[in-house]
Length: 176
Image (cartoon, rainbow, N blue to C red; front, side):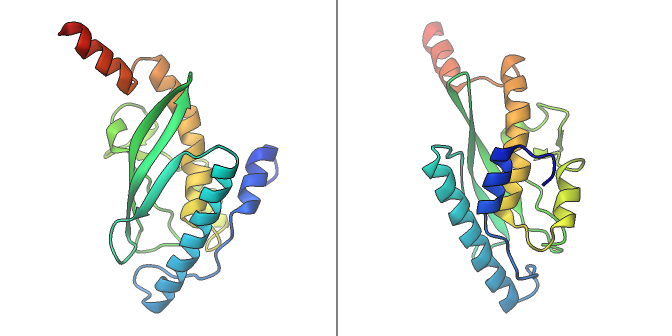
């Protein structure tokens, strides 16, 4: 954590580390890992809410806990930009980090792969590998998605690549 800003350090130290090294193919051990994942996500969400920094909602989209969907948002110039969030848990999880997808932004930035998968290779993946199996979904959101949104959304908005939902409503009512 050397070189990290104090806020990131503080946030990260409050997200529980996980101990069960299990992936989707590991039966009962995977169930235990999912319980740890939920505890970490609940702790991270509660912490964000207490600091008035609530910025995502996710839940498992299937009973196995291998597909996750939800919403994430970023506030820029006092406007909230909301995006669909989805990802699959890789078969080799937790050795391999999930690939976080924002399908609405597919093709909008160079820091994204096909299908809206955000680029996390240079900064996040080595960090994940170093902290396997202790990092989980909450850590991926905190150290992967949050900084990506902070870096990319202002650029996309300022360049006109993405528009606020109210801009679309105002434009359609003016043309009527």
